[in-house]
Image 1 (tube, rainbow, N blue to C red):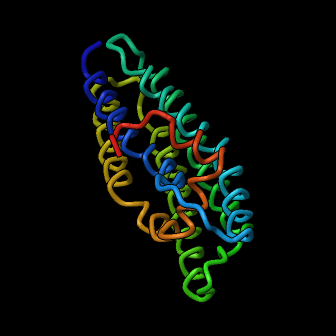
Image 2 (image 1 turned 135 degrees about the vertical axis):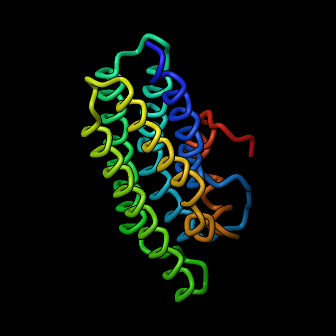
Image 3 (image 1 turned 180 degrees about the vertical axis):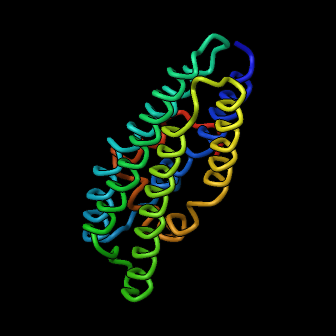
Length: 200
């Protein structure tokens, strides 16, 4: 059953890079004197992000588990397609949560609004990218080991690109006081302790 395994491992590695995007929503700094409005905003976003971050983590784990030497192409296809669907849904839900929360109250409403809208755009675009990866996986030929491995390689390449692009707009949204407010939310703390492939 050679052939798909190295590619599967590559897929899993690329994915663990992608998981960092979900964690980008969980700020790492901690602060104190935030406004109540900003705290309320951070709580709303963090509470919505937490279950989605878990969903992304579970999707990653499912793909990682399907990387053994004796994984059948059909099983790999089924697992990967479901994982990408879950990720697409999760990023869409996070985007909707950030959209619903509105711009954070940072005292610079124009700038905050632009950052918020950019982050929503980015999250929706990630959602669409994972949906298109699911479609790509669904169309792979599981009957032909060689073709399947080649197809998976293409998916892994796309994933690599996804994990290296991505969270700039989210990082911008979380600069300064917004990040501090998010860092103080229990739900963001628990989302950011999820295992990821980087040590940040």
